[in-house]
Length: 120
Length: 120
DNA sequence: CCTTGCCCTGACACCGATGTCAGGGCTTAC
DNA sequence: GTAAGCCCTGACATCGGTGTCAGGGCAAGG
Image 1 (cartoon, rainbow over the protein chains, first blue to last red):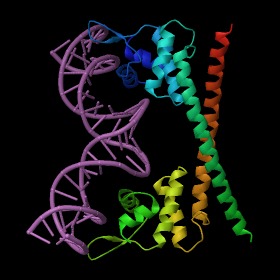
Image 2: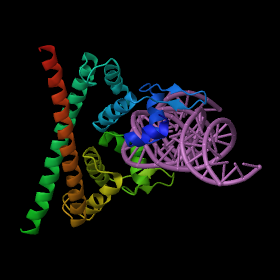
Image 3: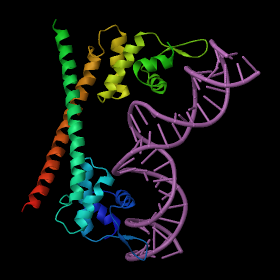
Image 4: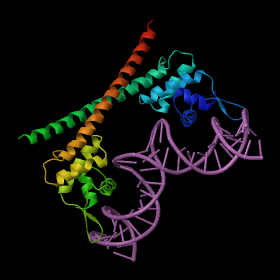
């Protein structure tokens, strides 16, 4: 499978796949051409990568998940190295949720204050 | 008051104050030197700016708040123009909270799955 | 032969608030 | 006169995933 086909099947672009490769997430073989050649299993890997990115992981965080999948596991998150990253990200998300909740309260208070001023 | 003093009092840097000016948030007078000259009221404005930035507003969003303060109001958020921005940001924050909550659930599920595998 | 369509590499653009550096001017104190 | 410390402008760097363009190769079909 060439890069364009994999990109289509994964719902992304060749540019993006080359970026993942540049960061060590995928390692396609090369045809005599120099063209990247992917086998079907890579589709699964790319899906894993994109799901994790969508959940706010960085490319470097994702490496353990990919390694875990490549090692034959049924999912990328069932390895201890992945768990470390999962826990770190969970802490970040909790932090973010706390701060956003605070922001939300301040916003609501300020909006409330406007309405009160309008009916003095 | 010169820029360095205002920066110190506001807990920020001259660079940052020049950036706010560049984006139309503050307009200091100039000494014969060319040096920026700020009066005390600007400290209040800078605090407002920094609070809003910390709550995730962009510099453009902040303009109505500053205008509201300058118009003699007790706070930057008590004007209808500010309310529009407040409501928009509140919607953004709600969106973000929803998505982060989803992420958090996925993370917890995956962590749970690891523990289950360890005690089969 | 020429076109079309895919592939390759390398590089710049984006967004937004801030840091930082270069190169130069003013004021004050020694 | 000179050193220190503030000020000025202008410009590039940051972070991260992606778009996009330039310049060039390869393959298949007319």
